[in-house]
Length: 259
Ligand code: DCM
Ligand code: DCM
Ligand code: DCM
Ligand code: ZN
Ligand code: ZN
Image (cartoon, rainbow, N blue to C red; front, side, top):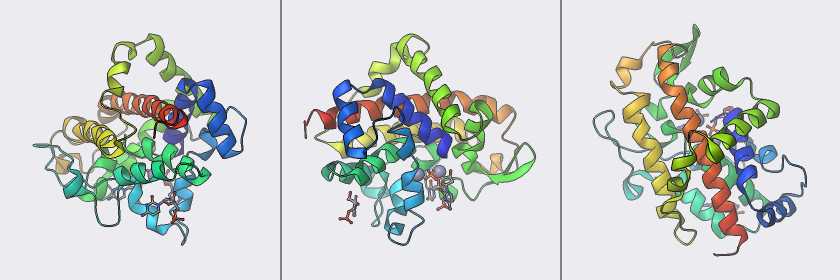
């Protein structure tokens, strides 16, 4: 996701953490404002472009070597490369969870693992599939930015907070209320690999159903802002909602010291 998606995930999580989790992470992050999670949600994207942080570039995704749209799957041993991947990163930043750096990274990576193309190897997660968006040349990885922004506005904290409020209401009393508890099925702080593989597999399934239902060549040079957008935006919304809800649950489990 781009900044809008990551910040929205963080605000949703802020709405579902316990008071004890909130004060613990506000203390770790040295920020007692309501924006304590949203303000660090894009830190990992800045860090990966520094020379000290270049090792973390593969931590943003897992390159599923599946065969969409015929067959979608993620296999940790097959797909998590020697340089690491988002599933291993979620595992490792739990082990080092006393530091602010780890908290920042977790807020970001639990967002990215919910972006379907971050759970797909094909065409470098869609980066090599040329498309247009409203007439402007881009690539299929515009799932990060252009699709969310057409719905919720430019990447500002204010737009993220507003979108998060809408999705929080949907989780509490709206379209997602009946399924939200099932989003936490299998979550186990003592087994982060298995937990985050469930999230990766869930997100990856949308590569077959929605991202490229007729294969990636059928999406080449399509303008994503019209009919494609109408199919994609409900999936973007539910994936952002799941990411925020699962991030809150994960931070609550860390804060209660279950590890
Ligand atoms: N990005 C950045 N710095 C750059 C280039 C890109 O912060 N020099 C951002 C733009 C996208 C984001 O990275 O919003 C995409 O990364 P991810 O999906 O891993 O968060
Ligand atoms: N880290 C990681 N996986 C690695 C190396 C480091 O998840 N292969 C994380 C753990 C720490 C952070 O990066 O939270 C900095 O670690 P260090 O200073 O030990 O490199
Ligand atoms: N990306 C991905 N899968 C890959 C490589 C990159 O999901 N195999 C993501 C990370 C960024 C975006 O694509 O969100 C652009 O990556 P980069 O800035 O490394 O070109
Ligand atoms: Zn991306
Ligand atoms: Zn990222």
